[in-house]
Image 1: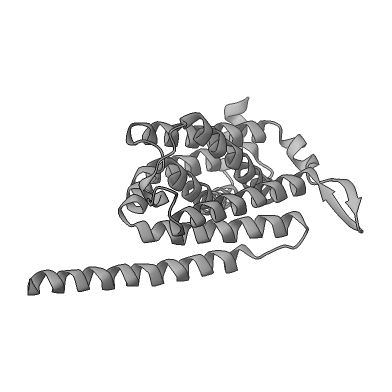
Image 2: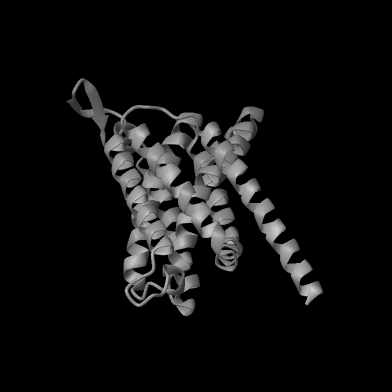
Length: 250
């Protein structure tokens, strides 16, 4: 019965178009989640980093699939729970506001640690988080926020549950494959950490705005992030050329 339903769904060209579009959307939404996971796990001891990333991404997959299995509940999250100053707030709004504030707090704290030396004179880039449980707890907390946004996007794009499941599994698989290279790149290029933390501030602010009913076009957000990334890559290239010239002179 289930096989017949899936075959019937994917016999329609529109279903394939919806699947491809949704996969792209889910991958793009997963980038934010992956940046947070990479920054946080890079502060763990070396032997715990890969484990924490696997647990974090695995948690993201389980949360997304779990939320998909209670799709009626997810749709209900968009209904207003209370009204404040003429503005209605749903459970989704409150989760987005809480998640956005958490991201802003976390990014601001990390930026402060990178800019200001601690009492012993070392910077945060030299320190690590020794409590893997605390790191995983923070990862799973923000996984919940990004998973909710991801699933609501999926629900709004298609009515077919198999398409949603496939898109989510593919997107999280891409996150899993990209986690190690992204984390290694961030660790190798400390200036990227500051750029990524700036992205988290931007994303957190956007989530808070969305929670208060002020929709922000994601295209503007990702365009700003892409532009900033290009500028930083040009700076990295310029630094590398200068270092090569200095090495040749010496």
